[in-house]
Length: 173
Image 1 (cartoon, rainbow, N blue to C red):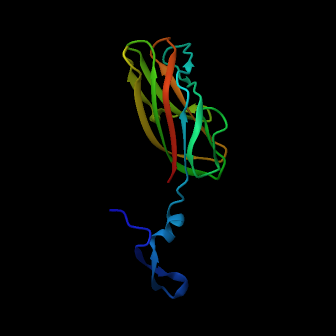
Image 2 (image 1 turned 90 degrees about the horizontal axis):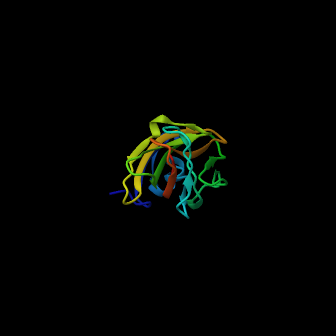
Image 3 (image 1 turned 30 degrees about the vertical axis):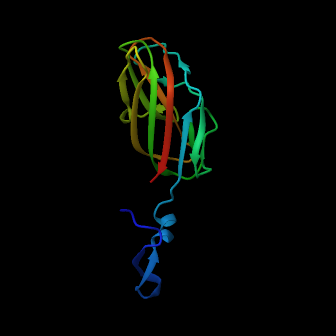
């Protein structure tokens, strides 16, 4: 069970001859974890990404809106993009995407920072004819000031990709 914010922890106060004191858990949360987060999500669905070459990553076409956020320095001013306008910080970045293409196509998704895809962020799925296929992935990544993140897609064949749903979530760690 997680501690309640009014639970007490014993600490040593280095500025007071190392005397011990009790502090509430809630008083430490801003110091221990900043809690910065942002979520953007696709609000229209059915955006089409043109695939001109098999197995080549291109920016995923999407129309998104900003969901929950508590950090004005995590900006969403371009569809499908989150920019870190604050200092360099480390995030857990998670994406959930559902998309369709031609039957038996292999769709591959990768996060990209400033237009450069991150190979270890890749997830892939085989498309069926009955419904969109879904994948997700999470990575830990340090974003510098002004760095932005987007989602890219590749298809195993030259066939357009249709976005059904997208969530892109950042949590500062």
